[in-house]
Image (cartoon, rainbow, N blue to C red; front, side):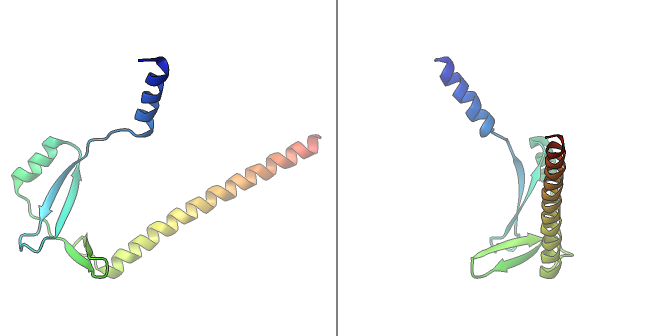
Length: 118
């Protein structure tokens, strides 16, 4: 194997790393086909959860036109779920705008300093 080939393999491994994910599946006991998945840190933690036989309660919201569904915490409803999403995306948008403003402000200060020395 040539050095170039080794280099490209290592770059591919860095760009597309492999990650092991463990999850515990909770099927609906009524047989309707709904499922909820909880991600766990290790196989042992997942096995402990299965062995405990803990039942979870989830609220299911169906999206009829797409033939899919989402599961929520029992205390949530469609309005509280969408409000949470709005808050999350507003925060993300605000942080992005702040980053752009800081970048532009820094660029303007550096441009003024450079222009003043010329």
